Length: 309
Image (cartoon, rainbow, N blue to C red; front, top):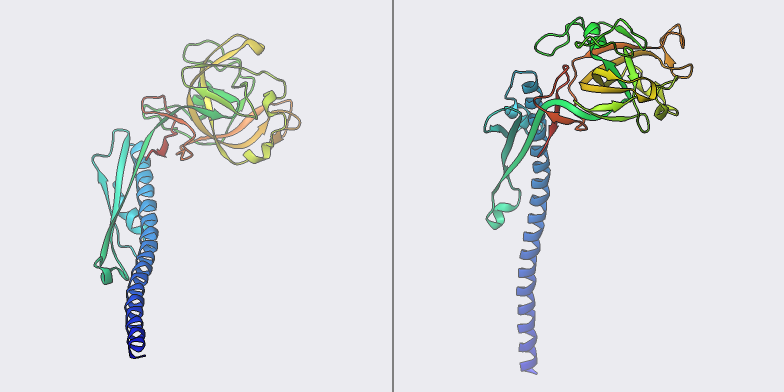
């Protein structure tokens, strides 16, 4: 019986050792899980800071004055403000790379020999001028644009953003080539009230009496007081359904009134007799990422900025 009691004592001792080792492992895994969760949250904050800084710097560069705000956005997006932002390489000529970093003090890591963790995030943004993309199936003539902005300076910035009216019938409006255009604006063929255009490429017209047929069921109220990108054309050929417009570039237009048809009218008194587009061209930065970027494209005060990495 004595040997049986000794065996039981040895089993209890082995169990205690096993439980002790298991508890150590469990505590280690628990500590690692807590620190990993905290590190993941910090990493997301760093990435947000890097993304915001890259976009902000690209936006400033697009207007010709690159401003390094990387450290500001890195700290602003970190809950404890403990982060550093830097520009990697140069700011330009058409992209910028930003890195944000921090050193995280682990909560339980010191127990297993990891008191701190270094974290890093990187983002790249590019800028340029929109050379193509999906727009309203409506294009405005170069001369109507020039007149509406009060002239167009060499820097590509509107000289005036006062409200103006662009009439559909504008026979006095002629482009630089002095070929009479069909009107101040014209309709384009599209799908679901959207047309895809590319600068330098001809697009087909859709001269319906009440606007583009692709907009038949479109809710025009969604565009009231909204800024949209519209293609500017500098040449036109043909008439009617055989007419084509040559796109020069994209401009931003803030809509304050329109008269396209008896059903598509807002803030215009004599409609539909006086078909028109009312509003003003704007300096506008597009952050949607929906447009092609070309640093050498003709620009109309509408830089496009988007993250690329």
